Length: 364
Ligand SMILES: C[S@@+](CC[C@H](N)C(=O)[O-])C[C@H]1O[C@@H](n2cnc3c(N)ncnc32)[C@H](O)[C@@H]1O
Image 1 (spheres, rainbow, N blue to C red):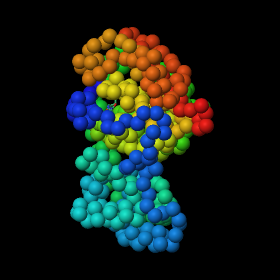
Image 2 (cartoon, rainbow, N blue to C red):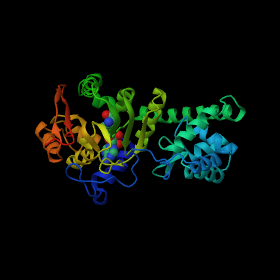
Image 3 (cartoon, protein in one colour):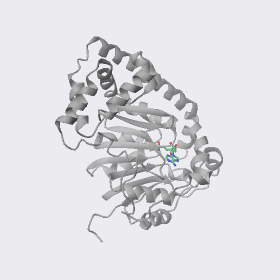
Image 4 (tube, protein in one colour):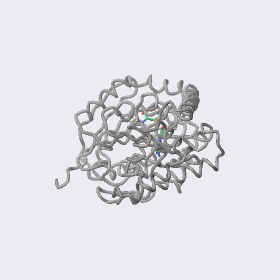
């Protein structure tokens, strides 16, 4: 399975020495919260108290017709400046200035993805509460709001079409790989079985691709986030999550070797058919272990050792599967206990599901 971005990524994360994992923390608790941590999704820096100053600043920022429209729009979808400019019919500098004011007041969050920047209504913090309240008071059928929603629907449809075209262009390759192993439904059943009895506040799907794992697990978690290096994949995932109505899930552009999350901030991590692309799977597991909360689980799905060289030549796989011992050693090296392992035999590929469990606080 290769995306245009993976071709690019083979320079970025497979062969380029400067892109090799930077300081990978070894062992649990080795790293502090990271710069650029998005696990809590921003919010106003000074908003720990619901003070009058914060309320006034937020109301001042929101108290303008275009900015109210921006709040209503970003409550419905994550949007770029270009998309917002198109919907509002205003110049880009003007829209950018409004966006900046709303971000400064903590009402909106901005997150860059390569050369693009997405905006959405803030989710955390006191200013976010004000933002949600204001949005709930905006009449959905007022002239501007109704027109904006109609234009937003067009933007979403265009995104979904672009995603579908990309998927179609690559579908044959993906289907070819799928035909080599057990049906996806069996693998998904195994993954669901491993996490369904857990209370999961924060789920992270590493190398989320088209976002299928988020779609599968999203309904049973409080928040889900998927990360991937490929913008095309992220576009597909976004379209999938939007059409599934999973507002609690989102995707971000990030490298699995340098996750933009604080240490001990995630309850469950999935890494489905990703590690065979990795130049350093042990480092990938170490980085995942860093963000896992005590008692948390990581579920790794990949191939058992195989000899299908074509996957290397045609699909950029670096590794032809992994042994149970190899995976157990990565988990052990970063202080995770090996949980249950399952093998789903297919012809010629066997899919393996490995689990690692972070020790509870205070346990030896
Ligand atoms: C085979 S796809 C699997 C996608 C998804 N997990 C699934 O099973 O449907 C592998 C994904 O890993 C992503 N990937 C590869 N290397 C990555 C890296 N260093 N950081 C983040 N994502 C990466 C690719 O872009 C691709 O979307």
